[in-house]
Image (tube, rainbow, N blue to C red; front, side, top):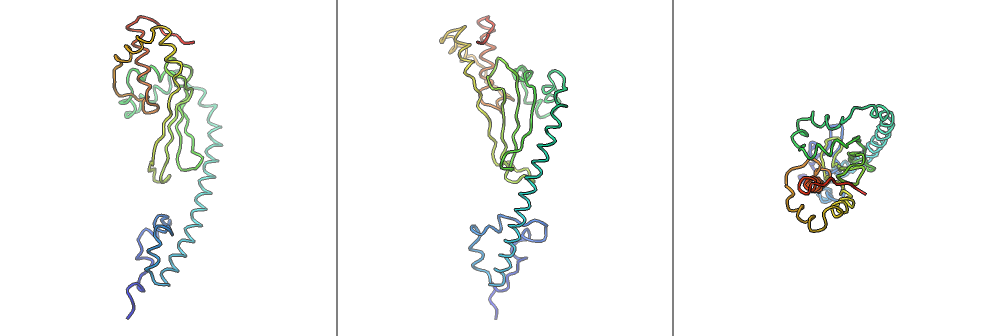
Length: 230
């Protein structure tokens, strides 16, 4: 009488393992699933190891595909750039307003900042497992960065599964200096207290943007001064 483990077939190891054109790396991970190999018969183990070798070849080919696709995208992105220069004033603000999801996120204080947005670029990350959105701003009175970015790390690029998102902290050294120049430190504390907390599209790019926008606008309203920068 044969042991049950001798009857194990590769097809019994999971329907996702074979027959769909793409093997599943998580299933065939030799470290995580080494215990599974130990309980298989010699014949079944040999077949699984053969599948693992096929998976390695598949992974190398897929890595080459991502590399070549990234190079092709970069090539045509450069060809697109001259076309993007031929835009209209406040193009990106109008584009965001035309999107139902973004339009609901954009507040009045966002709109004043987004009027300084000159370009938005999509860039693939170096590890080819994600992408970065770069928001290019011309000089403005709200923050010092010329670029705000969000980096999306993907678990699986084809399935668009996001692992994590990394934003960028704004460089706001110029903001406190401008406030202190006109109001003094005590007034700065007062203006901070009257800052209204509410949702902000720009906060999804960089925490703290709405605070600085509100402080500057409140200074101009309450103190009746027009803030300038140096």
